Length: 372
Image: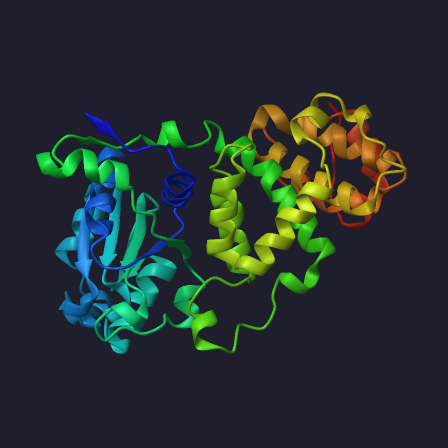
């Protein structure tokens, strides 16, 4: 049995699916996009529903008005019910950019918010689209900016060797790697470091957080930076192994654009940030007084995220933030400390050092902190 190789493209795609970030594949006709996407869905234990954009109308996504016990609401559809009833599923929108503009408007709420009529798709539904470049598709057009900015754009990579090995047998013996084989085993912990790195970068480069959308329709129909696409970037990168730079570069470029992705990766390389897990284990490894402000900011974001991710890490995170505050930087630590104080796990007790570090500041903000 032939197996697809764990390529950077495949890992970036898998990360988008597991993160619940909509993915759009762009590639020329005839490169097995549909077959591969449906094959991956099956291998990843997801029920797939395929919808062809060019054969649909807006009401196929918005629903039609029906009366139910005196209440008028929008209907749902069998394909949506199939996605909902499956434990995990994948909505595959093929020929995406050939849908009529009115149909694309109907698709927007499905992709953007997960609503089909008055029915909400669960978080277990991943959304994937495929389309040909405008110059090779029939009646195609560049994606509208609001739709494009919601998605991760991946240029399709055709696996030549896989095709050569399986065309003679009708591709009946192809094996796809599982999500666990492709992705990081602990995305929750990984997210803390990613969030700290991204927010640290955007603190240093605020002009890349929410710039004006591109004026050029071609650029607007692709990847560009916005608060939403940076949020998606955090969620996707959290699924990838820390050392998987190639897949991370593909994902970032497909979410925030080549320019912002290049600047982020360069900044990350030049700024050797702290490992938040190591700091939780021993806050003294940080030069809290002398360290650069951008590195401390990124670290505080990461430590706070990590502390909120698991109850057993909350106490360690509170000690780290208290250490930062007692080292003379309470204003830097306060936003994270406020989040921790609002989400105290277990019996509600906190370390005494946390109480001592934030007593005055928390009195001003009307918070109370009980000692452990």
